[in-house]
Image (tube, rainbow, N blue to C red):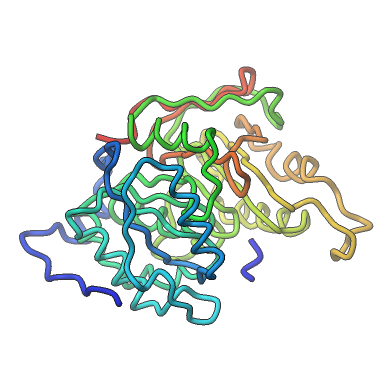
Length: 332
């Protein structure tokens, strides 16, 4: 991806698991299902939210049958960031602790989530265990919380997304109703055919790269990896997939689902444009020899149709049927 007054949290009460015990646990923790009409807290842990973005967020969220709250920090700008790191952390902690809030929705992506990972209170997050929803730069939060707390994260729309019927249907099916949801694609891009079963993990390609070599890097083995991207040229996609190969991130994984790679085909003026290959050729070259099922064109990422994918939940993929199906509920 081209990275182009708050009420302070009260003191924690009661015993809280240590970070060590959280990170060593292998059991996946499912947040409670979001009830119709429940309250969703909006936070901005990444890029700044412009006035037009805030207006779009308010309008978009009218499509959802939920109450919405946020702090004054939501509209703070700190250069290209949505407020200071301290403000972001306070907001996130507050929404987890606030008994009125049943789920947390990130306002937008952009950049900035990786800056706060070291300072987050993962014991607090584990104690209150709420659905966290978002995609793009929010990949960093999903993976860090999955690594530290083993809590299911929801790769889905952000506040400024277009909540069309497709996105609302899949959001409610996964986060509210706890359905074993299925995504089906007619004539998907198939790089390597086959079926696979594993836990879901993934997100934005640039953020998957950013997590490598950090304390928040996840083990992908026995997972189905889903990937999306926006605004990167094909040679950059090639470079990032090559880095994942070199870092052995594909070792032991069960399969790969490619989502939307929006504005990632080479454009006039791009470096190497006259020599550029297609995304399909890049995928085939970088992913076609892994001896696992790989298919693409799935509706998640930086497009209006953005299905919600729960990180840590078992699923099965079938390239012949063009399906990705959850094998269990993502909520308790």
